[in-house]
Length: 418
Ligand code: AMP
Ligand code: GLY
Image (cartoon, rainbow, N blue to C red; front, side):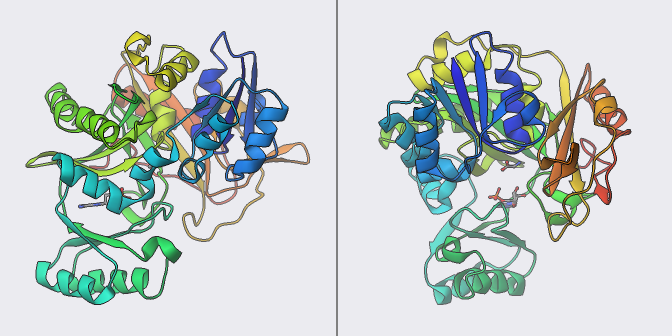
């Protein structure tokens, strides 16, 4: 089969790397891809958000299957557009991808179906939002409704901080139209874990749990990023918690979406907080997380293309999904300054050496004058396995040692920051 993957980050590199192992994938393409993906797939010069361009390219080149990995094209309805053109596509349709694209929608869904999450109210008027913040007190969480690159959430320690966040989102339009509606919710406490799950509209098969590290610096300090590293599985996610999550969160969510006429086919991301009152949903995403994907897919023993097809066709009960009985760690090497200002175009050395003991997924890299150079905030995700979590973490750090580029930044406490 001729398969096209849409996207250009570490997550898409991991998806391409795994798909390339499927015997049924005869030709693999990635749009737009990056320098690392180019070693596994043929990169295609179409932007991930160019829905029309993607459909045209896929049709002109007779793709048999398209995997839409990032949030933006899913929210824009790329899967709907591909399917309408007769091209089978993996990922939720627009009406199901809304669980990520609108926090107000997903909070209402959880309320309606009794899925545990933080108490909240939704506001479109600044005055009412400010009054609610005053009434509730701090700590309190203020969220822009729409997609804001993971940056539209403020966990405010004081009432003043919360009010400033609401003003910036609603009056100053810091996140554009994403902030015309805000969700203000109760501040939860406890460890955070991610559970990615395959869903076929009706059934849900969770992957091993994982844990992202969203803050830029050690000790969970500094600004929020897309994710500085991930481990799988996190020790806090016990079998007992897993069972509770399946019964109270995962299945009810998939059934709720089906009941609403929005069947979810694809990978659903459950961002969970293990609170003293049990696991609760922090957020849903409509796709694999990045860098959780790199860690989790490294543990998959099954055929990813078969699983994707089963999700699309409502046949997950027949899918052969096996996991290695190991742990994984993905260490992100980022550009100095990320997630704020950073330079691009620095040559990267040591990739070949690192690749001997780990899989080095590329995120922001490009090819320039015959060299691999940095081209984004998150540059690489060095991913290693181990028989224990400690071993996996040690292996990822050891493998990353030969890699260097100017101003390279990484956290030294992936898997150890609680
Ligand atoms: P989100 O984009 O909704 O995942 O939020 C980003 C981060 O903000 C989460 O990973 C949490 O660390 C934090 N967060 C979001 N909502 C809450 C909440 N209700 N209570 C505490 N922390 C939260
Ligand atoms: N790593 C968090 C996300 O992909 O949203």
